Length: 591
Image (cartoon, rainbow, N blue to C red):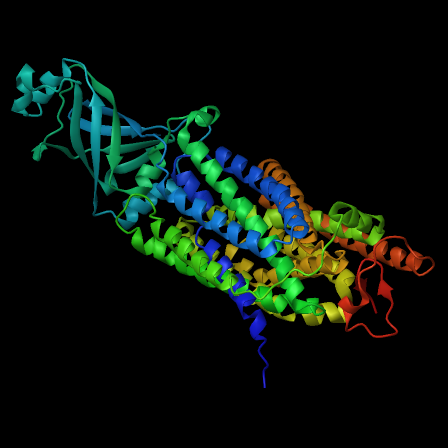
């Protein structure tokens, strides 16, 4: 009969609800920011700063939680600071967009022409998608065009719009407003410029023949357009604001502020929540994975469901409608606060000098190696989090034909599902058994080996669909890693510094490793490409795996010959270690 620890049910509920609450917004946030009109450069800059924010707040509020014994209070407050700013992002308006095209009417034909800025190009598959899949359809583009006085004579005489034959009826702003009618099979890409051949126009509800004789003055002007096709608008629109000028926009500062506060909130909730979890587990830290796996269930389930809702509710709209995900976040984290308030947690251990006590552990060489390991794993994690989908989309684009655009997002959804349910979930569940069998040190080596193999397999991909079996390795490279990192930090933490230690290792992993890894991976991707970048990271991971094994073996040999100074974790924290198994300085154990 399965025995249920009712005391831990609110903890399981927290992991499920908090991860379910952040899942609707966190994966979609970069694309939402881009939809608001910010360039990929600005998005990249923001996501370089956010891990550093987490690095700073995790240990800071960990110290506050331990020093004043207010873990649960800070836990609840920062759940609010996660949900509310995320929700407020929904109300930030898009920055001004420029969709200027050239309107040319001459020799009996009329067209709209768009040429992108230097350094950018238009995807040829976009044109093929519209002209092939929607060949019988019609594109409508509302146009506002600047005019010269003589142009109104053309409108009057050749377009047969008699209203504008009278000077009094010409708009005061001299803007010509009409709707261009473009058959989808009359869209062409020529010399990196997109041409829309106009069949006719519509003005004041009437059809207008856009006819300009060859023997008249060339009718050519610039127009702002708004077409009823999201793909077309995505191709011809760009921000009016240069990257260097975005700091003058209130939208940028609101977005930046809300993201910083939410990221800080998530960082503190994760680190303090883990500290509370380990304190509730007492002398059974190996059961941490059994609690944390509920977070993976929440994330994997809701992220896919949220994506389906966004696509469904965005039908017929020019841009994706993310409204539903913000409401999902505020509701789910609200339920999380309700469950978290039921936690039966009392912080009983107190450190009178937290910084001094935490500082003691760094005289232990093995613990210093552990922190270096956290940084290195952060490098690899950054490559997967930020550039795996980029790499797969590059591979899909390199394949013949344009069909990849119709299934690549489906593949990415499948990947997220497998990473969670096929990878993280079983390894979180089995992490306690694995750690008892092989020890934390061997688990750390296994994670490095997993990264090396995973990255090398990525580098060999030619067909993106072959990534699916590789994603089961996410159990080793994230599920086992996270359980190992959190439980090891709990074991080596001096009494009363649990939240401080969880914050510190989280800051080292994300604020140092992920942040620097993103910077390095981004530059390598730009210079040598995706496959070569994964190959370089994979080779480095395998070299570090060998180095880690050698260093730990040498440490075992020296530690058996001398007693190393520094803090030793309580023996009861490793209750399942047999009597003849030596306690390894730093809180792990080996067979």
